[in-house]
Length: 124
Image (cartoon, rainbow, N blue to C red):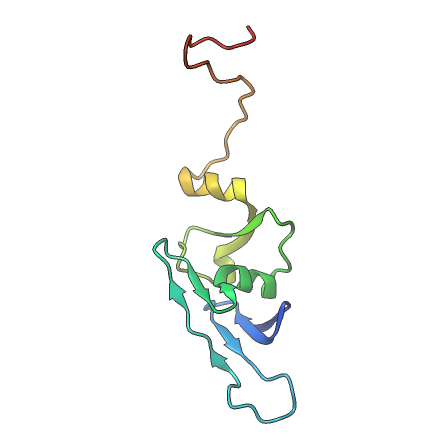
């Protein structure tokens, strides 16, 4: 289903395909009505268009605005090339980093790292 992208009122995002299109919001005839924007895939498999990263645009249209500045569009098990809303969710940068590395969240270890010179923990 096509929904408007809040920050881009002349554009819509599709929740199933991840396509972005231009639409006319005026009552005049528009030569560019319902034209899909070209997307380019970067070396990591993420798609972008002239408005920005497609995953973030799809989430903004179908889920809502980015919760905080620290949130990014995270892809699920279907991979970076799949921008359907079922494969996307807002994640913090930390959550997204851990997901891309081993798929699990770390247990927080409050022990400071040993010093490089002695191998000892500095305040013990």
